[in-house]
Amino acid sequence: MNMNSHWFIRFYHKMGSPKYFYDLSGRMMPYFAVIAVLCLSVGMVWGLAFAPQDYQQGNSFRIIYIHVPSASLAMSVYGLIAVCALVALVWKMKMADIIASSAAAIGAAFTFLGLATGAIWGKPTWGTWWVWDARLTSMLILLFLYMGLMAVRSSIRSPKIAAQTCHILALVGVVNLPIIKYSVNWWNTLHQPATFKLTEKPAMPAEMWIPLLIMVVGLYALFGFLLFLRARTEVLKREIKSQWIKEEVN
Amino acid sequence: MHRVRKKRLIVILSLLIGGIGAVALLLYALGTNLNHFFTPSEIVQGRVKEGQNIRVGGLVREGSVARDQKSLKVSFDITDNQSNVTIEYKGILPDLFREGQGIVVTGRYAGSANVIADEVLAKHDENYMPPEALEAIQKAGHPAPVN
Image (tube, rainbow over all chains, first blue to last red; front, side, top):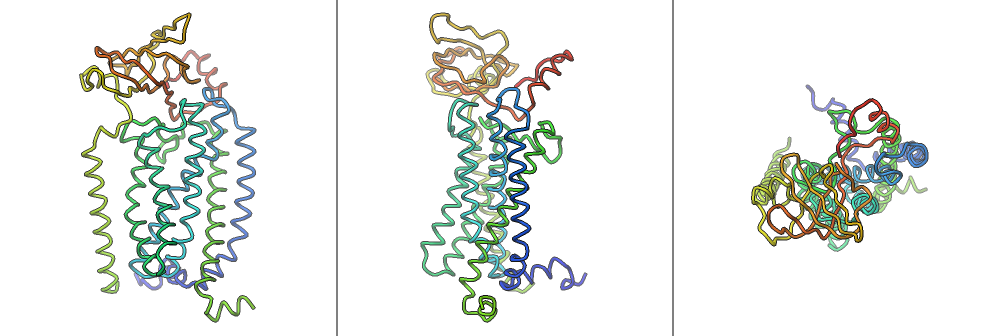
């Protein structure tokens, strides 16, 4: 196979160019915004008002429609940051660093949302806001990792050293992702195991999980929109002296 | 791939694998200490010393809940369908507490499979369904799903 002609390789090289990213993301953003607004409003109304109650938890189970997409995104965003960190360290790709630095704060926000909604649900269901079981603790560590990435980025004056330190931290922290995912299977935890598995039917009827799926799609689209927004600002900041930006602004 | 990049990739990947290996060994060494609770079988097997503060997790055994009429005292058994541990508790139980429900109890081990509880938490499982579905299951003569 001729490596240069493979579509992924070509896409990869193009994405390395801030100008190409700026153009492409600018064209994609309206679509992401529309998908996010549509899915989040439909999913929210469906999930909160029309989906049936749970036989045990009653209405309090509806927090799942925010909790699960947030927690899922919290982990996916970290995975994205880790991949970008690897690319930035090995291939010194500018865009990878921009994406990694733009995604950290959004990931932290979703992690916080996951932890907060979990606590609100835990109080009536378990009888406590918080326990130090493996799932909750590893998720809290994820929040600290995100905060570490943000702190390192803003506290080291040299952007190059700050970026490298962030990437190494991001890669070291990636070991936490399988721990979060499998904590509920490896150890006894108060948190229940996954309701959704790739290999099995969901342990939930369709009228409950379809709105959840819509919320997941909506929140991922929202993440894409926010990421593009932040990354484009970062591109403008870093490439301020380049010719194409002068043309873009004028 | 360019030689410098290849070298960087190898260094980073070996660091990553080393880090993951170290964490895996650490978790393996900690082993069951990371468990949030003991199962009744582990307690009956003598894994816990008398007077130790522990958590026990399992199902509330059917027909074992005995409430004191004049106070908030309640006693019940936790089972993992092999062994039972008797819990004594004084306080308000969570909404999800019922026979057959999975729960986690924090308390002091009083010896001979008895625990004096300070806190009773309900454990929710991964199954969700509407109340009508439960009725339909029961109407069809199947037992209620165990939580």
